[in-house]
Image 1 (cartoon, rainbow, N blue to C red):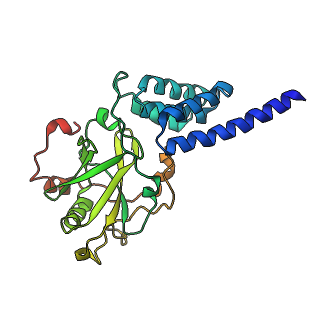
Image 2 (image 1 turned 90 degrees about the vertical axis):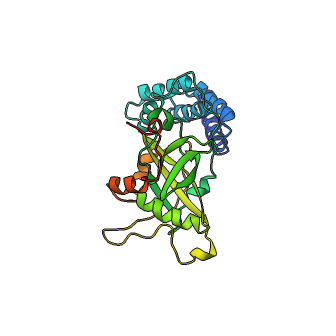
Image 3 (image 1 turned 180 degrees about the horizontal axis):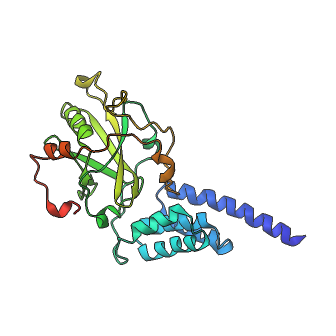
Length: 271
């Protein structure tokens, strides 16, 4: 009977470690999170969830080679694991020896939807993939108006891309009248960086002006309406895609007009 008790004890320990690993990740305590997930794998070496969490922690620590190894083990155990495959694709563009400065993370509650005050956009004219690959869900970014365009940068000032023009022009006007916004990466998949934007302050002069109008039939903007927190530890982008805002399909001409007065550095745009 003793083996059964040992198995039960191990499972209880695993559940406790899983809760601890997730809590540490939510607090951005990646070194500790990596150690806890490794402890799980020492007892349960085929735990793909622990491998994915370990890969995320190692990525945040800039240990790209080790992160790839963790995700590769997941794929070997479960070839259909989309989380591991997406992260392997993203890490493939990074040099194993480079480690970026620790990115600033937003509180997960930032991703709770609020009609009219939150929205999602994919970046236009994005930076090269090797730069975008360094960004992960939850990384805070900053918005900087340039003319009628809205530039997206890391908190260190590194160029990432431009907000879709219809959204940008509306937000720039509101920002010039005193509104304030915060933004963060919602998902990063194969060079497609999606940004979550939240209105954090509405100037009295903008009362009655909605940052993200609800889309009328066939036109306008629909705000992001998923009422949940972003799950850092798994990065389940596929569950979010069906519920993201639809800001339009092809606004290239509008973007070019919005950027006419802006000097675009060719080194900062994807070919």
